[in-house]
Structures are given as structure tokens and as C-alpha cells.
Length: 333
Length: 166
Image (cartoon, rainbow over all chains, first blue to last red; front, side, top):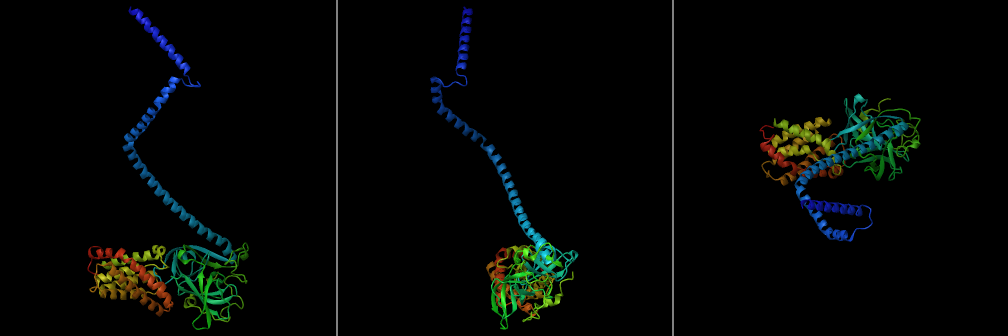
């Protein structure tokens, strides 16, 4: 009896195995459609499965939340640090970009304008300024050890900055043309009318051209350049443009307010003319954009005095301030 | 000792004025940080100490800037003396009173400087000097009083500046 039961069980098992194998074969991957039973079961189960999956996600989120918070806090801290570093680097890069622009301008000036004008230049960085509001002085990081001497002309690519007023071994003081103690022999470029450019006050950033002969035609936007003529400043350096024209209180001369080409509040690098020779042959002044390109249109080399152009032998005497008188001349080259 | 501390404070103020504060110019004007120290000190210590400290700090500034030595020494001494005269007449704990005092002191100091500059041959139009230099500098300097006066006062009572001598 037990043996019969055993055979029966083996038979049922075999049938079950065979049926299952058939089912496996029938439902193998690649068949075109599902059976009605499967379809009904799948449709009935799908909402439950969806709900269960969602609950699972929520539960996982709930369980892992404290761990995530710790991780997120750490990550947030790391990202904040990275952001700070990146912002610092961006600021640094921006600073390099602006410095590069300024240095590029200086380099262009060296290889074009300075060569055409026959200037030999030394670059210097501005390290400090006068602490008060009355005087326009700045200190540069080059001194007598680097060949800087008193009364040398100081420029920027835009135009005249001032002159060296005192020198130490590694620094020099620059008297800006906006300083009320400054006086520059100048010409109106268009009609070669002479005058004297004086500083008004560093706070205003303006300069004034005085002792202009009354008969001279002075108009707004005319360019004013240095006159040379034995002055401390070399000839042909752009100073500024005429803004307003008036008459001096004496009634004998005209005066004009000028807007300088140089923005004195933003000066960071300047150039000192250490010597002036003959203009270079590679670059012509005609190739240089105004106001530098037009500075010498009437001929003559920088620092020279042309016949009939001197203010002192013209119609109006040009006053030289005590600052200019005491200074001597541009060092011999 | 106290004078040394005042001179160090003034030296730092001068460094800031000639470098960092160039980036904080308003209408081409920088505040006079040294004057703040002179006026605070004179107001809290009286006319004798005010004048003496003003002279020493002014001389330091003249030596550092290297021109017209005595110009700042004289003007700061005069301002120190004048402000010191008000020591017992005004309420000391009010920043507002100090602001008005600073405004007046700055105008007086700059007017004296203007006269001395004219005496040395530096000529600036009076209108330009008043409108573009004196008034803006006085306002800018006075506006810094609320930031610094209480700290100076505290230092004068319990801090580095609490010593007896100047």
C-alpha cells in the first residue's frame, strides 16, 4: 500500500513537472500575447503593486532621512566651500583680466607711440597717494636705482600725468597736473595757440589753461598738448580737451577749462620718460590714433623748440610757475 | 606711552588714507581719519592735551608726506586746542553732538590750512576750495563719527588710551 502511494506521488510530480515545463515553454520570452488569466491577474495587481512601490519608496526615505541629512549637511558645507573658492578664483581672474588689459595698453604704447615719438620709457606701479584732499601727488615703485630722476615726465597711454618731484632709491613722488602747484607749458593742437595749464584742485579732476591770447580761436573739444619749449615737459604729449572758454579777470587773456585725457582717480600704472631721442623708423606717427597721432602734425621732434612757436616769443608770455622754474629741464639723453 | 599709541593710530590712519581710502573716494574726496583722532582726543582730554597731541600727530603727517613741514602740525594743534575748550561745555556721550563738533572742527581745520597754503603760494580758487574740498571733506569725516567715537571713548576710559599722560 505505501508503495502504491509512492508511485502515485511520483506520477503526480512528473505530471506537475511536465506541465510546468510546458508552461515555461508556452510563456517563454517572445510570445505575441499574454493569456487571459495572466492579463486579468496583471491588471488586478497593478494598482496594488504601484501603491506598494510608493510606500516602499516613502519608507526608504523615512528610514534613510537622518543619514541623508548628515550627508547633505556635509555635502552642503563642501559645496559652499567650493563655491567660495570658485568665487575667489573668479575675482582673481577678473583682476588678472583687467591687469592684462592695462598692461597690453602699456605694451602697445611702448611698441607704437613711444617708438614713434622717440621716447624711452620705464613702467612703474602707483603705490600710494597724498593722504589729504588738497594736493595731487602719488608715489611710484621706481626710484633712482631704476634710473628715475627729478623732473622726468610721467605719462599714461591716455596722456600726460605729471612729473617726478622727488626721488628716493626705490620710490619717486609724482606731481600730478591737477595739483594746484603744477604748471605745464601747452599748445592748442589745432592752431598752435600757447598757454599755461594749471591744476585747479585734485578733487575736481579738472585743469585750466590760462594766458591764452585774446585773439586766439579757442573752441570746445580742441585738443591741448604740451608745448616743450624748454619746459620740464617734452613736446607733443596730449594733456586734455577744452571744455569751457572764458576770459581772465585781468581781461588781457582768455582762459579755458580742460578735461584731462587721464583719469587720475583710476591710475594704477604709469610710465616715466627716461630719455627722448629721435623718433623710431618702424612706426610712423600717422599710424597712431589721435590724440597722440596728431600731436606732432606740424612737425618737429619731441622736446625740440620750433621757430616761431615759443610762447615767450609769441604774442603772449607764458608764465612758468615756481615749480617749473625750480625744476630744471628734462635730463639729457 | 599714551602719545605713542595715538601716534601709532594716526600712522595707521595715514596709511589707510593714502592707500585703501583712494577706492572709497566720494566726489574725489577722502575723509580725514587723522582729524577724527585729534578731535576725539581733544574733546575727551581737554585743550592742553588736545593741542599737544594735535601738534605731534600733525608733525608726523608732515614728515611722512614730506612737504610743507609744519602745515598740518599747526592746523591740528589749533583744532586740538579749540575742540579741547569745549570739553566741559558739551555732553560727551552723544555721537550726534560729536558729529556736529567734527563738522565744525573739520571746516576750521581746512580753512586754516587754506590760509597757510595761500601764505606759501599755493593758490586755489576760494569757491572751489569751499565747495569741492572743505564742505565735502567735513561732511564725509563727520559721517564716520558714529562708527568710531564710542570705540575711541571706550579705549580712552578702559583701553589703550586710558593712561594719564599724553
